[in-house]
Image (tube, rainbow, N blue to C red; front, side, top):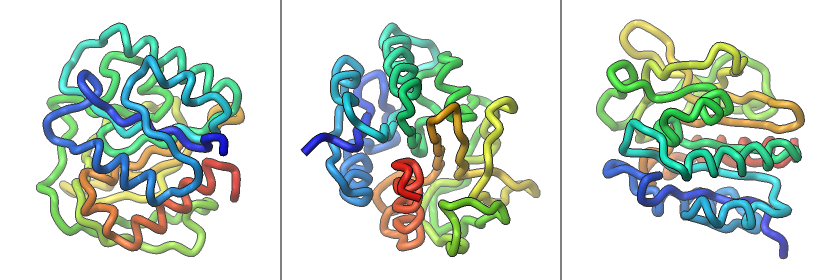
Length: 218
């Protein structure tokens, strides 16, 4: 059966010491269903995406400067989105591919060192916005054990549609949003620090809705 979804699970320069990406990638694959393959190498990504509808990027970086593989990834991503593929970027993906403007503009934000932070991980309530969107029809607020990314550097031109937010420091911060780029659908979800996040029934339901929208099933 052809692969429907490819998960790029960061390793080496596309990982960090704080996230167990292999574990969360496996969990995401189990939850979203369909024929899924997990790849950990940019060199293998283009071939893996042949015929796929959805790319999930569950990656990070413990560095501040780009490497050659970042540009290789950008070329693969451009080709995939250019043919109408959809993208889900999760949690620490805002740290991935540092210094790569194409990645930042695609997902709509980046972790900015010295500005972006998160309160201590723990039980949190994530609020649904009033935005009407196929992903969130019938859903409510979510209780989840997770980190709440705060003060992400948003890209104004990305025209993001915030679906879930949290409150911190007297301000409201977007956590999950959706956007389109041409015929491609793109979602960023700051949820998913570790597998405990996916023990939340609300998060599992949200992830399923996201996958269905990205696969053009809703």
